[in-house]
Amino acid sequence: MVAAGRRHLPRGWSDLGLQLGIWFGFAVLYQLARGIADRNPTRAFSNGQRVFDLEIRVTHRLYELTFQNFVDQRHLLATLVSWTYWNSEFTVVGLAVLFVYLRRHEAFTRFRNAILLANVIGLLGYILMPTAPPRLLGIGFVNEHRDGLVSLAANPYAAMPSLHAADALIVGIVLFSVCRSPWAKAFWAIWPAWVWFAVMATGNHFWLDCVAGIGVALVAMAIVYNDRSRSLFAAQRA
Image (cartoon, rainbow, N blue to C red; front, side, top):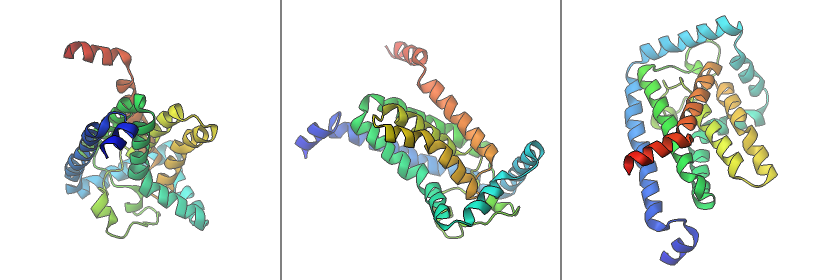
């Protein structure tokens, strides 16, 4: 096992253990803090209604409901968007982080930090502005999440900003930049847009939630990938 770690792990088992500790430690703290936003459903529904009202004033129609109606008429597409919603945030992000760690290690630290920072910013948004998703507002969406998975795995009042949208953009940009196959690059180039479509078509986010998530991702990446900021931080540590 030690020899295998030396051959296949960039920095050995100890560093892998450290990275897993950082990742899962953050995930536990994140879920504990995220539960704060679940304590005021009245405020969450009020904020969700405000997002809905603003969107209607801006676009004069509900594109997300059109997406859901289109998807619901096509069983395969409905299955794909549901799978994407449930797996894009944790399964895909986790596997992407693992791939970059093992195969493109030089890009790992910034990638990890961008994901973590985006989620911290999003968590602050959930605490300050708990927001119910479209499917819970009684405005025509079909609520497909009637089992216990929502209460066990997610905060149902964390629609603004959309971290599905944020993480998908970060993953798409980084994987596009580190993958070498043209087919892989093409897949990751369209991945963010597909996730944005999926979270709207499942009634989990308004497009305004997605725009806010995109903004979160861009801010996080601008901070993490700013060489001047990294140099200043390194100088302060020295």
